[in-house]
Length: 324
Ligand code: DGY
Image (tube, rainbow, N blue to C red; front, side, top):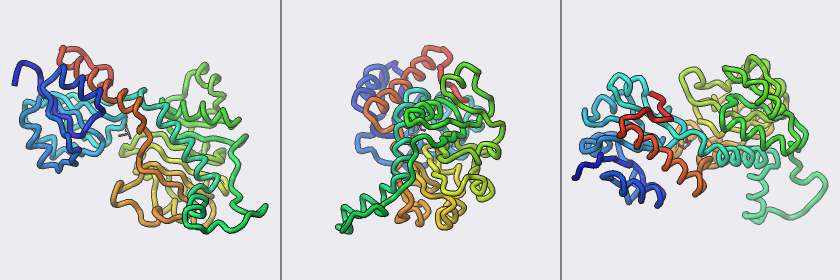
């Protein structure tokens, strides 16, 4: 090993990102894209000055406690960092960064896809065609919910939420939102967005509810039975944030009763293998496998942003996206 810092990339990264990584650092790569266990993460980190992980690697307090002294940074390839115990990292003096901005467009696209897929019954439609169940057409056939001109509600009007709201405006939707700190008047006006001080005030205004808040102890199970009951009957629920923000049993019960007409979900509790079984075959659920940021442009952007953060850290500067 030479003088360059050693960076451990836990997953296979886009070609252009790995090219820059090996140009500027001693890189420990994962060409087989193996999902490492906690023990393997700790073992491989023994030779690293920094780790470049995805949300698939869980840096719990226990894992962080076992990392060698040498590890100075966890530069995530993700905007979400609920997979890292930031308090434990901070205590160890490990810098943690994320990759905001670069994935807002791609994730907002998936939010709109989830909205339309749920509202227009795409799961049922695809199954009818694929399984040769499509036998007829009539005015009553596959009638869904029109979103044009309806109300698009956002919980968590951050970067992704704002882009999703902008796209929803393209469907002439009226934007309603709640956020811990209200947007400035100019941004609010540009989005044509109506602010609600609480989630409880927002929910009755949502024909479509799109979740964009991070998973934190405060937002875990945020969309529970009491709150779902505040949605208008026949509302559509969209989640491209994290599975943890939804109480699955409550959403599934609301889909069964018809209070929620349909849900478009890109993220799940227990993903990828242990999601609530009711979601898998539910005709009113339009499910996607956590692909919000899955475009070439965005995945390159995420990798470059993570590397920008590492470059700053190893140059002794403050990384732009420091979260701990
Ligand atoms: C993110 O960046 O948080 C996406 O969910 C992918 O990890």
